[in-house]
Image 1 (cartoon, helix red, strand yellow):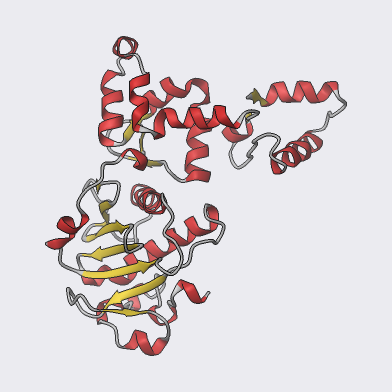
Image 2 (tube, one colour; image 1 turned 90 degrees about the horizontal axis):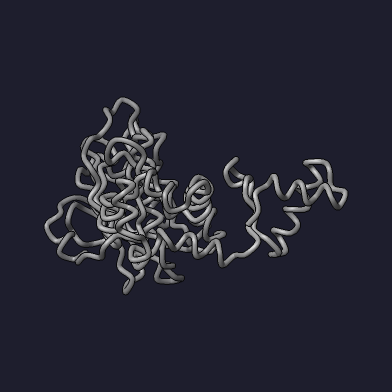
Amino acid sequence: YLKILEVKELARHVGITSAHELEEALELFNTRGILFYLTSTEALKSIVVLQPQWLVDSLFLILRKESSYRFKSKELKRLGLEDDLMYTYKNAVASRDFLDYVWEEKAQFFIDLIMSTIMLFSECNFGEGKFYLIPSLLQNTDTDSRNQQKKGVRCIFDFSLSFLAPGIFQRLLCLLIAHKFSGGYLSQESEISTVAPWLFFNFGTIELEPGGTIHLSENTTSQTLTVLIEDPKFAPKCLAIVRSKLERINQDVMHQGLRWDVLLETSENSNTFMKLANPQTCKKLHRSWHATKKYRNFVDIENFVDHSTL
């Protein structure tokens, strides 16, 4: 890689002196795959990647569990980061201090890259200081047993007619955690929630606002994502948030390649579902799915059609 100041110096030697001209050249080279250069944040603009393998290897230092063996325990102990290493690979949450150690002065570049383009990082307030959720390090769990004793209303996002790509569920967890800790709660008058999320690679429990707890699970066999909302009165709001995050993933990461149907449970714990396809179908749904006047701005269920028709 090269720092942008080094690139400017090289460009000057070949007659490129204006910032606009240099940006156009870098954008052209990036489009043609000659190099890798992004401009969405100042940190991303500061580095030009010449070898993609260097980028991949650097990302895998954090994103893969096997990488924990690469770090020298004596050096980490000397720097006071031994516990940070264990916490990262055990709990899938990394401190900013540990990321600074791993990526050195390029830490902000990689954080911005993963959060803004790959969406496999999420800043979270799990303790004092800055911490980042890394869902690729989460453990699997038995989703059937997790969901068995849960009560509430369920929504299923069914990808079986297309494909539920690997990493979609983990990206969804990231965006929902970011929503929770950013203060973007579903009702403006809610107090900040203090209940910590309970997360696994294929299952998650997140309190989006006090009382608004959802349980999410991934089933790769049936190609579905299931969202269970404990308190039915939060159903339309939670549905709107989850849907918006999936659409952001579809647009920013999957280039509109995802297609899904939405199925809503007809009554609480009934285990019978109805596909959202038209207003007539919606009128037959359980009252929990219909937004109250107070929350009409969050979701109008009668205009909430399945994504496969868009």
